[in-house]
Image (tube, rainbow over all chains, first blue to last red; front, side, top):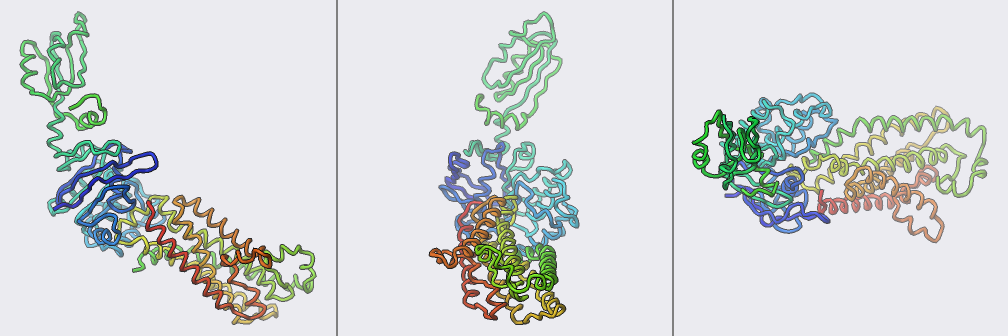
Length: 306
Length: 261
């Protein structure tokens, strides 16, 4: 069963292709991360899925309803929660008045429970809200009617680390209940902690779509080496070494041919590297998971293929 | 149903009460100055000094009676021009302001159709349109008796009742601007310009060859002079205004349904 299905979904503005033939599906019950830098077309996709803009070509369905058929989509919207990337609330109204409006249209069976976790100052006007409080109010409006599918555009923008953690725990619990989550982000650590699968979008095109652990495997390891004696650089001139940086702390070594300290990303068999180093006396060796940021850079940088 | 209309209507209530008080004060002022004005100038002598175009634009027929004075000073100036522009301006913000400030996505993510949203936002404008007509009639009726120029209750009530479809038609112009332009500033300026241009066109083109053009202006179908001086109520005109309002609302709904926001 699919919660969201896009087929060749395209949105063109005069000169710009904001979404170029996007095709993918989001399965019921998964947390799907939609990653890309600002301006990549993430918000355009979300706005197409909710019928705010109409596609130039292609089709999409949410909860089995065609997004270009307004009355069908309305039926789906009763079961969809949405959080926009801007706060999007009437600034002159209090949080309570806004929640009451949402409640009157779509229901609020989970309002109290959510307000215990996310507690914006409801008696104050939204004008006085911090970014974090506006976001908390948004989270409550997105989930208060107990939706089956939630579409979140940069949901943790403006939340402090404690709230981010709470929101992550909350989303995981929602998934346990069978809720499907589609969220856009450029916050990679969040995506890796939360998502089952990730789609990466660049300049309107889908670059890749895969389970987050496969993406991490593909992303390789960061290796840091410190040695007592200079090591010839050529032992690191092998496939799978990326972004190599070397330096020498020893005055009589030639920095163009040898190093005493280095850091690089490695996507090959780690034993091969260790074998090459076995003749040298190391002071320190660290092998860490590559930050997803680097993976990301590789997808966007375009020079180094993974 | 009507959740958005109720919400928006409540938001408009406070401003509408202030507006109503302001217009009632204007009415009191007009009644208050009338005796000294009429004593000093007597009859319509002053009118002869005005250029014909001026009389035509402001629809001044006579100042020799309180009714004629009110028709010009209060109803033509206050209701037809000021309030007509006000509701057009307010309606121009109804949709465009939410689009401009990024609030429309949050509204439309809820299970509510675009046509319904437009209609409910429009109906919420009935709050200022009705409330502004509440205070002025009693002020006029009491004030006119205090200066011994009693106004006919029926005519005053009719002047206000018949202004309601007129003001809705002006709001319809604003609403159409609101769905055509997604920048609220532009929508509001165009609404003001169009409404004022229609007022001028209708007034200046009367009794010329281009008179037929004025038929699209709501101002043609609401005539305070006729109500106050002759006691005739143009119900056909009111029906035309209702028709115009419905047409503008339906066109606005169709435009908004098709637009990217």
